[in-house]
Image 1: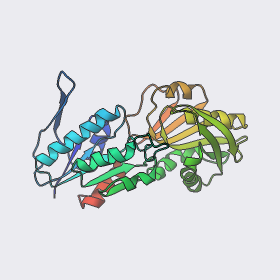
Image 2: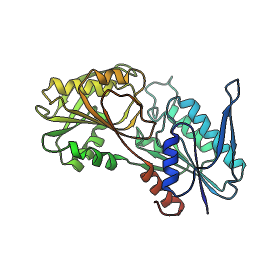
Image 3: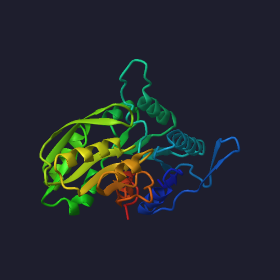
Image 4: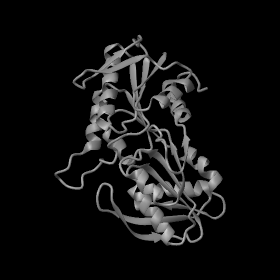
Length: 306
């Protein structure tokens, strides 16, 4: 059965790279906005009886990109597509997988329900902020891990004298995997969050004195956690050659300003969202296209990856 790949507007370059890796041109889909802001979606090719893959990270603006994905899916379903797969390199609302109080909304579950109601037969995501979110979906979810790709990208900077640093207790398992793969020691920062963008560091476990820190996390939003971690390891006597590794580099709000105030030498991330430009430090981007293409081929029995 033929496979057609469509890309939303949230990360068109990754969509084009994925289509190329799968050996087929990107599907033609017209997206336009009416004067009142409504989004109109119309397919430019026949998808009847085909497998359809729609790639769209729900990156900022999250609501707009999520609605675009759902409208594209509806257009494909009504046009007779045999099966629909959503590829979400970055899944917004993944941090809302639980409620801290009875008066909060459960955003992760709500978005999962919306995607299921969008006629998708299968979903694919990369490094969900919370793996337990998988339980919110009633259709198969392929949860891909970009850690191996990122660890190999950071290997040139991970020789003797380096240390992997977890910025909080929630990232310890992730940091342990990096430390094992790179054969480096591990240090852990203990933080407390005071708001959605502010954190306080309470302590540091492990030795960083004289070592080059490699701070690893799955997501950088406003960079409050990363900046606080960098300051903590510097105060503990680490070298000022700091590498930051993250799957999703959103870098919203005050993120760039915060990171520019600490000696970040380089950032290594994937292209799950469109990489920001003009950063005051080196930014190495690892493409997710081969990882996504390989996974798609395995679940659709499609042609092999280029």
